[in-house]
Length: 327
Image (cartoon, rainbow, N blue to C red; front, side, top):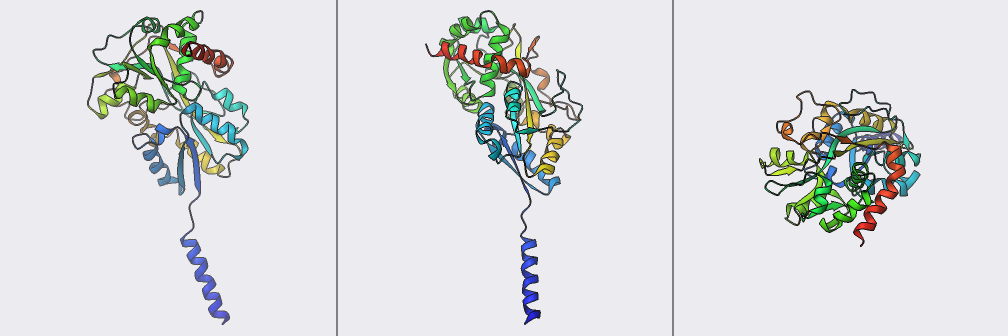
């Protein structure tokens, strides 16, 4: 009987081993990153091929909403890594005390110097209004504000592009940003909570232009062979966005999180970015940027607040936006 019981126990252990689940790495990010057409599916497959783990992306709205969720969850967050906030939010993210040093050293191809120990960039770009070829393009935010052109923008309280726009107006027109917003108010058809909804409304013909990126026309050109979408080049310059990820300090998957952070600046991750997230990669792939990127608008002036300055001025910038659009 003892022999039989031992055999049964052994079989049970073997069955348990055969069905052992791989460790799960949970990455909070924004919705478009995990969409079927976003970078999420390809990055998940590439990382799982080398990590012996289950990488699970969790969409949490747009970038600012993503940070709000992490702030709300605090130490109880299920996230091991947060991917998709930008430098306008890193000061607020750092204040939560939830993030650990990333420990990654990489040769980044950014137009700015980077020395943040907790947040690691994975892509960057310039905000721009994207329209259809043939629509008379304004040459500045000022010209847009006095025109009859209709635009769709995003809410700066939930969306990183929306927050980027209020900082764009603020940095390009530091002495009359409130007046710019008051003049822009009647151009705004609607304000969406995130980028995906806004871009969808533009494609459905609800507005002449949408707040997006100088790189957005590359999607239409490369994926759809449609050269009819253009980004308006503005004389004041264009506000820059650098998107980053950070490791949660209290994660119970610390080694996997470290492995993912290092993977983020690898060729496998970075080569996916230009034609899925339609941004500039933080590390240029070995084959360079895809054909078509050379046609994109190159701003003469790049605007960007430091994380500290963005944090210090965010409330006033959002209040100017809110006051103008609520009238």
